[in-house]
Length: 362
Image 1 (tube, rainbow, N blue to C red):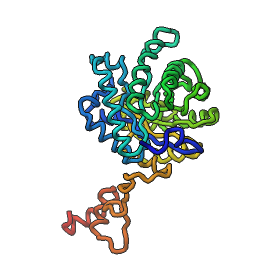
Image 2 (cartoon, rainbow, N blue to C red):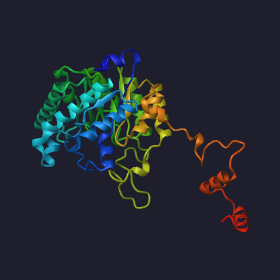
Image 3 (tube, rainbow, N blue to C red):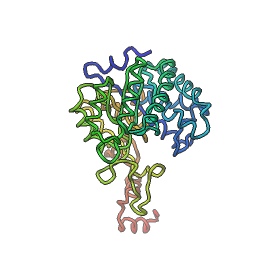
């Protein structure tokens, strides 16, 4: 068990870093189907789920999040596996608890938007609440340290999820997802919505998913001004911009075809983008942060290091000084290496090529 709980870690300006993004990373590796994004890998390859938890802790995550995202009743029913609902949840929680205990990190249960909630449909509210109740109960029985309720596009649904978590008596992190307009789908500005969640008793509030660092940060700054307690910022590591505010809106520049969800890699953030986001988040007082869909341990390590951590993965941080193509030159550098670099970088001149031909070098 960790020495401190979520609230203790965040006390007096402390920080909690969380490596999310299991869903997309398993899809990239060929163990999860894009589209439905149901975490069947928990049952089919539990050893890989364990390994991914370990990879993100190795990269600096303070939290092992049980892979129960989209493991709710409605999703399992949609693929004909509703009978596996409890088994999948309990298995994911058991794996996460074991890794958290082995690594001295926090273990979080996880619930998310249901896809059934409708603003003016009271029956959908009851159905969503019952779905939250069973997952939260399993998380508590599985020994979670806190519960993450994330990717909510309706404030009303997020408030229901928070109510269920509070009734269970565990700490909560509640994050909303911003699409193109700067309001929830029940038309509440995000700074106001987060303040309402905070006032309702959420321990951490904020935003996750959908937007990349550039288009998420303006909303996070507004939330920082509106909320008194710890706030969360978990962008997707994609280069969203004013034209494409979310990674769902990207269009191929040549064909105008939609790139979401399977052709987005051309817009991935690089490490410098993640470093810039982490510095800005730290500067404005974001205490709970990480990366969402598209995250990978090498990107997460960059964020962790900006937040002052030196995880085990830092031992393998890049050092290009000895790289034959871009490393330091030095006085006695081999002339052949200089030639190779010129070829690789496209810096070789036509005259040099002619001379090489004359000399029989090429």
